[in-house]
Amino acid sequence: RLVRSSDNRENGGQSLAEMAVGTLGLLVVVLLLFEGALLFRAYLAVRNASREGASYVAQHTVVDGWEVVPCEDALPDGSDYERYVWYTCQGAVAAGLSPEYLQVVQPITPQGTAPHSPVRVTVNYQLVNPTHGILLPFLGRLGWLSSFPISASAEAPGRCSW
Image (cartoon, rainbow, N blue to C red; front, side):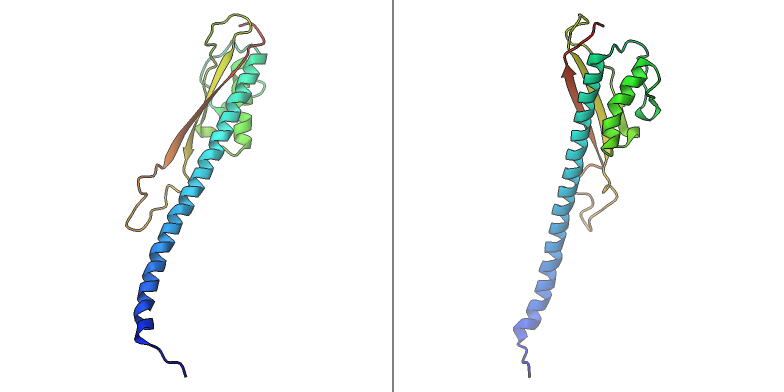
């Protein structure tokens, strides 16, 4: 026959309360790690896309069509600028980034347009947090952002004259 002491009954409620608080803390840590990993992955994809764009512009003369072309509308057989945008976006889209939030900025030559001048390409991305709809009980989102702006630039030595 088992004998229960009064201590076990009193500690049962305390253990349940501690487990609830501990589980909530663990959930917060897991969400932070998940969001940090998504942010880091998106940054690496944007950084790679800017490098690809800089490499493309350094090898090709992109002179016509400085209009804004969204990534989802760019075509590989379009104008020079459309090909540049398409080529720059391919790596980021292949890495899982959404093309409607990806923006490729017009390439610039910071040292002028002399032959072999370096070219700089900037890519912007608005990472919409997949956990933006999750609210913690009594805590809400704890001030976490629902989207994160990510931007990366890369330079490449020009191989053609502008």
